[in-house]
Length: 141
Image (cartoon, rainbow, N blue to C red; front, top):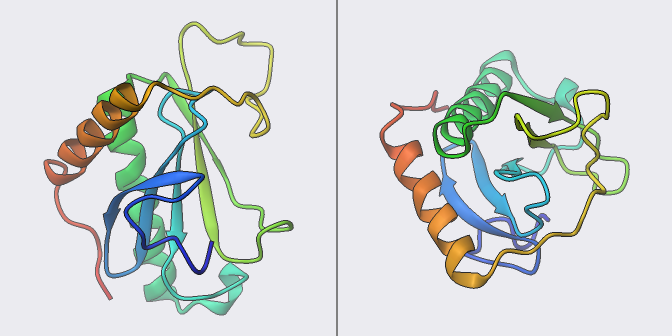
């Protein structure tokens, strides 16, 4: 994650945008349509290591990513997961819930994998990039 989060594409995701604080990426596993990650650019393991300003900028990017996901994928809710036990680098998983999802079943990060055809994935990526661009500015450090 630390070494390839900035790349346009890697085996697990594609870059939506890079801000002064974060890399926002669309996961290749689209079992939950719109599943994205917001990855802190600086190598930090825990949120407690960040200054209040830096933490605020990170969460502003997470919020803006959620808005872009809502716009493109029309989610009914987004689950935000910050774990890091397997990947010790601060990042947040954004897992959308949709009207067709079972309301009694928790969204599971391990669901899938469901891979879109390349053209459909590229279309989703471009739509997220447009939604991000039209959603205003992030808090920069």
